[in-house]
Image 1: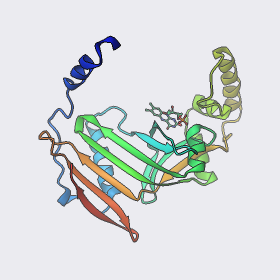
Image 2 (image 1 turned 90 degrees about the vertical axis):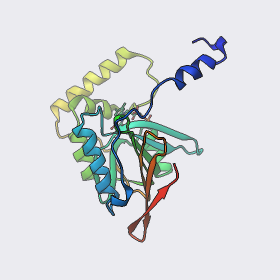
Image 3 (image 1 turned 180 degrees about the vertical axis):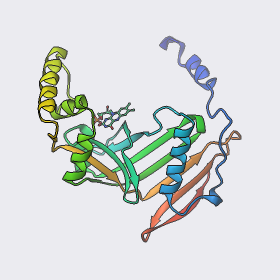
Length: 223
Ligand SMILES: Cc1cc2nc3c(=O)[nH]c(=O)nc-3n(C[C@H](O)[C@H](O)[C@H](O)COP(=O)(O)O)c2cc1C
C-alpha cells in the first residue's frame, strides 16, 4: 500500500470496504415526534439497548479565531429542552474557540444502525453550580488532570507530567470538594437537528428539524 502505487490500490481497497451493512432499522419520518429531543433519545436508547460501543460519543466541531474548523470526540453529558450538553476545560483549545465563537456542531454516528444525527447552534457555558456538579462527578484522576489545565499543550517530559499528576491527585484526595473553576458544562441549543437513516438501496432517509418561533418545523431532505 505504498505511496509509489499512486493511490490506486488504496482507492480500490477503500471501495471494497463495507458500509451500511444491514439489517438496518426503518425510519418513517411521517411518524416522527414534533420534538427532536424525543426522537434523539429514542435513537440513543436503541443504540444502548443493542449494546453499541460508546453510544454517547459525538464529534464536536468548532471554529477558531481565524475561522478554521476544528473537531474532536466528546461524551454527551445530558439532553433536555435547553439543548445537548458536553463538558471540557475552558483553557483547552475547544474552550478558547467557544469563547471566541460560541457556535458549534455536534455529530453522532451509530454505524450498526446506519444512523447519523447532526446538530448546529449557539453554545453557552453552564452556571458555576452546573459546572461544579459536572466536575465533581468526574473520577479523581480526571479531576487531578483538569486542575493542571495543560490539555493539548506540548508534552515534553512524561516524568514531569507524572509528578505533576501525582501532586494534583494528592490535592484532590485531600480536598474532595475542590472544583476547578475553568471546568465548563456547555449547552448547545440547536437551531437545526437532522436525523439521517441509511437505507440499503442508498436512497437514505433524512429529516431536519428547524427552529422557528420557539417551535420546530420538519423538512425531508434529498439524500
Ligand atoms: C470517546 C471519547 C470521549 C471523550 N470525551 C471527552 C470529554 O467529555 N471532554 C473532553 O474535554 N475531552 C474528551 N475527549 C478527548 C477529546 O477528544 C480531545 O482530545 C480533548 O478534549 C482536547 O481537545 P481540544 O484540544 O480540541 O480542546 C474524548 C475522547 C474520546 C475518544
